[in-house]
Length: 311
Image 1 (cartoon, helix red, strand yellow):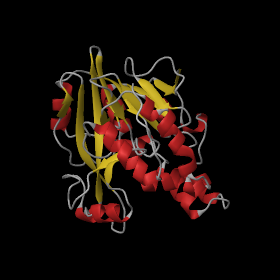
Image 2 (tube, one colour):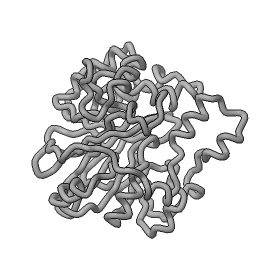
Image 3 (cartoon, helix red, strand yellow):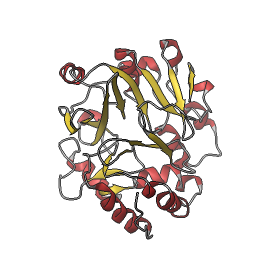
């Protein structure tokens, strides 16, 4: 783990929006993926709107909580029409010395008041390259440390906020949550992590590599619009613990990689050799008794067999 104070230019740089647009070697699918990881500059990020979210939900009393909210997407309709929004989930870890927020969501003042009853926020963690738009507001409000995966593109101007920014990877000796274990998705074009927490029978926190969009009409919760769910169904996104098809497209297929030749080894030899029974993803409600459900989902999605392993 390294502590730095760096801007986008000093990371292991991914193309910025301007450079990507000027690079004629990139396909339209690659350009779209690059734009998705292009974080807003600090000044713009500080002005982001607060969107509707739920109240604090308890997963494991005294240790683990979530808040579910919504995120607008321009999917055939301007965001101002409020027709296409998708659920997203912030994980809150409570330790003796403070809170760690994973997959951060900007909250209302009432939401912050409820969050602060649990303790002071000490860490904000960004596990997925396609998430993080709200992190700047959380960081400035709480003066928290920022934990990002090595190679992530950051917000322009972040270094001027005077924050502690930690880059982390699977070999890091120090992580934001005590006794946690970090995994990264192999060969993903944009860094994507999974954090295993030592609570209960094990809690796996993900972003887009595994999601939890329950099947059934309007069954994604109050924070997914009907039009969005129809699009998600068409794209094959629904199901417990599914590897998100648009994420696979942006990180593998668009770059000429076959995820079906890469990810099964990661699932068999890494993910399912760990002890975990709860899944909390960047989208959707927490999934309890999750491991066997996720195993079944991935076997069908990737047409593979994942043998049970005693942990």
